[in-house]
Image (cartoon, rainbow, N blue to C red):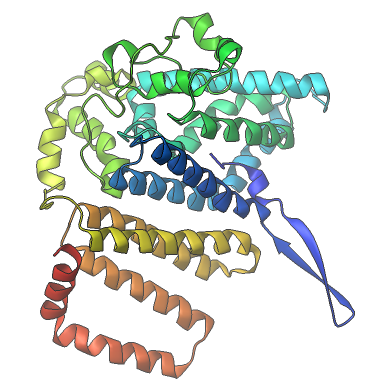
Length: 424
């Protein structure tokens, strides 16, 4: 959703201090985080006031976690995307396109047209669906679902959009249009807005997109558009909303594991390929439709990789702990993005590891896994390494050694009490 090079274009603030100007380079795109969280909060309050239950706790946490990972990893990928667009434009551009009102509008239309075909193929080609399936796993439908985008999907979309610099559009123009094009879909992931009259004939509206996310048989593989609905009507993939959609996959994932949500379909492809004979049949498994995946594979994979430890619903204590963790890493992510020019590369890696470990940890807690205890330890270890890198003082080593002593001497007791406190 926020995948744009503009995330790296910083405004300059001049601050007068002791009669000298200090230039502070801040990434103001970080303010998108509290902005969109605020919009999610407003939607929640509107739904609650109207008596609608549009937000499930575990689904909401899973959605936000995947959105956090996407925004975090974009920090390291947006520069790559810009470099690729710029390289293709400089070396392979067919036309020398300059900025102009008509050309900006043309680029927006082309961007949306290419998106339609990427999105359609992402539902029809297993390799692409493996990256896109994460976006459709939530059984809720609200603004938090708009954040369910993976870095794998980002690379596939970039590959499709790479035709634009070859046509002749400069990288800066492409990135600027993608900013608008990337923000619009956020607002169509909602059940609080009904049909919008004449706009239904031109733009993709919340009603249209509810159909796309539905698992009802009549709604499957419809309404691929992102901004304009004209492509669906032109290519025969449009269906109007006329009954209440049911959301999620046709076979519900029934897991809040951060890792399983990202990699389950990749495993399904690999295991189906392994048991399939012949090059042509294997080719269809990878590049054919999801129908070519053996439906018995997922239950076997779940039995092997996704042991069920849930002993009922999440307790209030567990929910509070998960909310506290997610709130903490959102705060860390915000300041990390805002001040990224001042964070050393090694510390950036440590912060990334801490955030990813926390995302895995919160998903595992919702699944009531026992090994979360070791993720807690790993996270604290990474935090200590980052602190020692910034302040290499001997007292930090001494403090770390003191903390380690009870862990190694009483690990079993500490682990047992931690799990009892967490899960009840």
